[in-house]
Amino acid sequence: MLHIFGNPIKDWDDNWSADILFISIGNSGFSILSVFSRMRKAASSPLSGDARSVALMAATMVVMFAATALYGMAVSGHATAITIWGAVVTLVASAICSLYFEVALAG
Image (cartoon, rainbow, N blue to C red):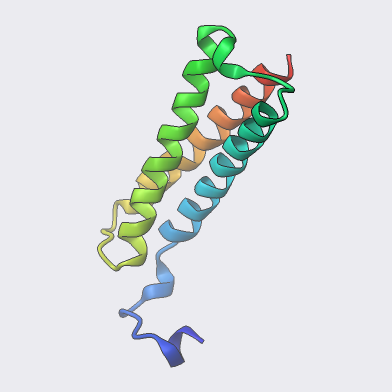
């Protein structure tokens, strides 16, 4: 479909940056979405909790915004060979932040 309706750059499918960044965005985004839905239902409020919960929420949002910015760069064709390393860093940071944030809210 992409080859028919788009004009892909040479070797567009050799770069995994966009795929890894999409996973990072999804991971952090679903974590943030679950927190906001809990806050809306008044099941928990991380903003009234300790400073660690607020810091983890902020870190999760920053990771998601960074991954989104890198994703936009990657899919627009402006990525370089080292974009994959930024994608891997955001994936690991997203996993760590989301996991600890969910655990902090569960406890």
